Amino acid sequence: TITITIDGKTYQTQEGLTIMQAADQLGFHIPRLCYHPKLSIEGACRVCIVEVEGVRTYVASCAYPVMDGMKIRTNTQEIRRARRDIVELILDNHPQDCHTCERDSNCELQRLAASMGIRKRHFEGERKKYEKDLTSTSVIRDPNKCILCGRCVRICSEVQKVTALGHAHRGFQTVVMPAYNMPFRDSVCTTCGQCINVCPTAAFVEKVYTQDLFAKLNDPSIIKVAQVAPSVRAAIGEAFGLEPGRAMEREIAAALRRLGFDYVFDTQFSADLTIMEEASEFLERFQGKGKLPMITSCSSAWMKCVEQFHPDLLENVSTCKSPMSMMGALVRTYFADKIKKDPKEILSVAVMCCTAKKYEASRPELMVNGLPAIDMVVTTREIAWMFKSAGIDLLHIKGEDFDEPLGLSSGAGAIFGATGGVMEAAIRTAYELYTGETLMDIELESLRGLAGIKEGKVTIDGKEIRVAVAHGLGNAATVLDMVRKDPDRFHFVEIMGCPGGCIGGGGQPYAGINSMPLDEECLKKRAEALYGIDRRKTIRRSHENPDVQRLYKDFLGRPLSAKSHQLLHTHYKV
Ligand code: HC0
Image (cartoon, rainbow, N blue to C red; front, side, top):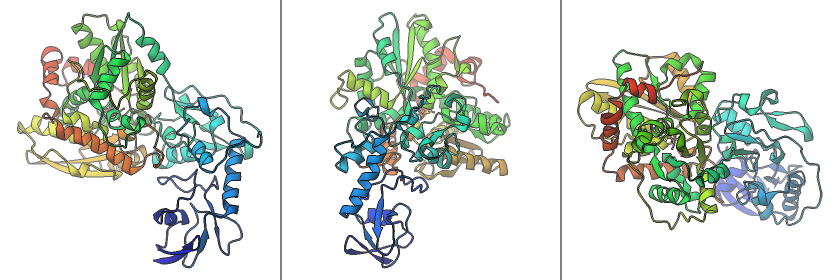
């Protein structure tokens, strides 16, 4: 330990910390903007400046290390004024449209200005005049709102290892853009939306479909069908002011009906179906028919990532469509038949925690009989706005069940939303399909939690199956390198594109006042909400879902049948 003085008082702290880290631990909150605990230090905004005795200039506390005997002042009149000047200068160049901005009331710049007591704009600074990039299916890039904190650039390169964004030009002309300023659509962006999650302002936002959806919901000539992703229920409460971790599945089902949907189905049902197909595919490969390790295919950003960066491993990727697209395929066929409607007369909407699902929905190879499996994807944030706009109080609405025949799910379907959940669900079913016996110890702790890469082993009928789980595309790249180096190391690999899995998706509610985006405690609580749903279910294995069994009996035949292949499996672009 070392001794430092902050604002006249002496404290013990550890060597190796930055001033900001030491101050955080001691209960001093130094204002900050470009800093993010998951990312490298940028030191770009200078909002976190402090005074260190003996150092001629103010230092950025996010980057400056503590030293024994250091005397730090965080809160003098001069420092407060200097920080305020910095924020005022950012505001001088910033659009003045807070009241119509998507980030109004949860913008970090706005919060900072308010906490510093900035109540007036002194200067009309020069404004940036860029076209918004609207080309992506999922993410809108608006450089006019950018304050050059670089968080988007860092998350894209450091956490996702995609590097779709970089700084270009100098001085006032500096702008964050894809390579060659190409349209976002044509860049390597995987549409994961993590830039949206970490942006402190609205320089990145999702492509919003709320008004289109409201219009469609008013059309009496169509049947409106919604499906809800597992992680939406684990996070939507946050958009209504609840602490993270409250599961709200029955409330969402009721709210969607009140919004105007005729049928509300559960993506967890088709997650169970995915497990039937994926576990069967795995066992086929395990018995010599196909490449190992098999890699999961349900995360949309991951699918774009593997196609563009890792085509050498495409044969390892499961041919299963994602649960969202499987559900869409069933809505257009099995369900349309059941209600005796032309599939064209059905509006198929997916409520997802994910911006990349908007991209997935646009993929032509996922169309079903010439129609898109999904007409529209809205994120957790979008559906929360719609509920609020329609006066639907999620906190007080009486919960309702999802609709038959695509609404019943097992606990295995629920845990899909947390990293490791797909693998855990697959093992629960693969074990029984292979041995004919029920796996009793179904909570696979080694696959849970936020370690970047998790490894585990299960023994099925005396044979060891080695599995790995990675979340975030950077960790995915590391696991793939392990596979390239030693193709026999794993038999089965789960990859989810976002940190934490879908619970950390790019469409989830913005961070609350007291937390940072992608805060680990928040992700853990969202995951725990899903594990809680699993524990409360009487059916916890996908193959025990009676409606999935009925679907096979009445319609698909069996897993990997010709019909299953036609509707539930896909191929990839090289
Ligand atoms: Fe996910 Fe999914 S788990 S990708 O994040 O597999 O969005 O929650 O809906 O499709 O089920 C998202 C979440 C899904 C799908 C499922 C998978």
